Image (cartoon, rainbow, N blue to C red; front, top):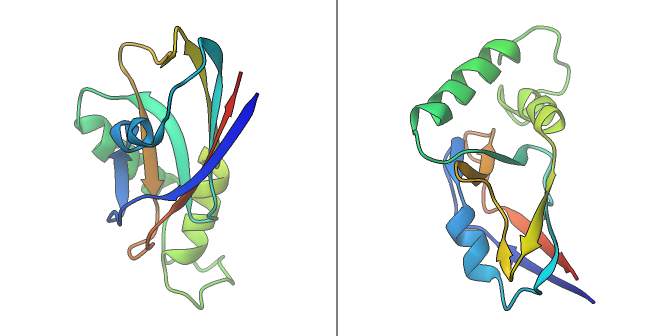
Length: 136
């Protein structure tokens, strides 16, 4: 069986945001076993799984990726939408637009310290659309 649903996340500022509770609030009854795939329909944001307890992880992500992929670099040609635009596209490609999560005993089978993150790379990214596909 395959079930698919699309929904919007609330507006988030630039940064790394735990969205596990937004995702689980969109889940209906999950199968006993299966997979959930989450896909973000944007080229300047990403979805990842990572540390869900220590908030310093979020600021470390932001610091590191901005050092790795800086804004205002003269190599960028795609700058019509602002200094954060092309770096956001590159960051999105590095992190990726989707995550797979196993379902076990009717629940998302995340690790003890894992959470689902929205990585918002734009200063004014807007509302983000997620496609959730449940396979059983």
